Structure formats: C-alpha cells, structure tokens
Length: 192
Image 1 (spheres, one colour):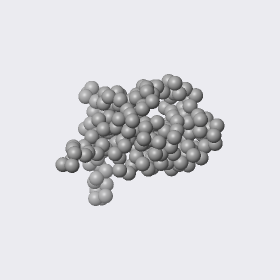
Image 2 (cartoon, one colour):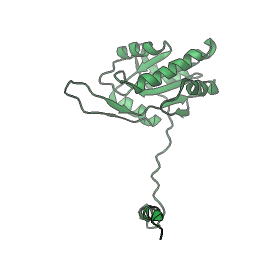
Image 3 (cartoon, rainbow, N blue to C red):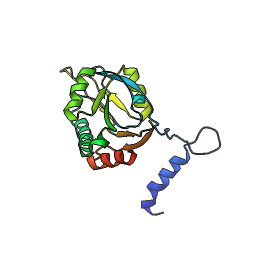
Image 4 (cartoon, rainbow, N blue to C red):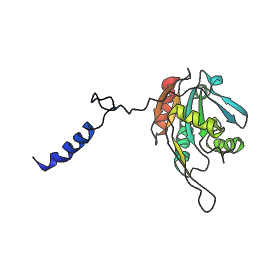
C-alpha cells in the first residue's frame, strides 16, 4: 500500500470506532443545534432594553466588552461605518447593540459612554452573569473569562460574530469575525 494513503486509512478506522452507543454502528451525531437568537431584556444606561420594543428594525448584535483591546473596536467600528453609509430613513430602522460579556466590570453607564464613542445609534447593554449567559447561548456566542493577572486586570475571550436580527425579531444572519463595513451594510439593507 502506498504510504500517502496510510493517514487516510487510519483516520477512517478511528472514525469507524465512533458510534452512538446504540450498537447499530451509526455514526455519532454531535452537531450542535443552530442558534436561534430570540428576544431579550437587558439593562442599558437608559433603563431596560427590550428587543421586543424594536420590532420593525434590524438589529446588529455583537457580544464583546469595553476592555477588549482589539477585536471589539474593529467589529464595532465596521458596524458604525455601515450605519454611517445608510441614508437617514434607513439609519432610523437599524440599531447596533453590544451585549457585554463582562458584566462584572461593564456597568450600564460605562457601556453608554463606550457605545457613544462608536456611534450614537449604538446601545451597550448588560445584565447579571446568568442573564448575559442565557442571551449568549441563544445566539450561539461563546465567551470565557481568563484568570486575573497580577495587575488585577483580565481578558475575556469571546466569539466575534455579528448577529443580524430581522425586523420580525428572528435571527437572519451571522456575520463572521472581520466582516467589513460593506458586508455589514449589505446584511442590514437586505432586511430593510
């Protein structure tokens, strides 16, 4: 047997050993369910932020935190540039929302200031750790708080997708990390 086929055969043999445990020899199904998004109520500096009150608008939902050194500013900057390219009528029907994955540090007041840096039509929201975790789970967003450094700071590793929610309140698209302003704009306009 040629050597270059050996790794393929080993991989196939290992996969054949994986089963559902039902004795039927069918392959294991470990596919996670697709995220569905959904309505949520979290806190903004202006009071409760309830997505049900935003029916008819497109929501660009991003999970991040104010101490994020690079990924969040880049993604939120792309979202803000996309909002700036909308005409006035369109802009009134699109909302950029950052859900903080660091509720221990990100207060609603801090998030208001952080969001305003990017765009006046952006809202930063937070909640209890359990509330934030439930919203993130519904959207399929992941995050993990890293250990505290000697200086008292810490990082939060998180997914960097932008979740596009249609005017009907349903998750319509998930934009990959690094989505350009043009991609964000196109995703929003498709739903207007």
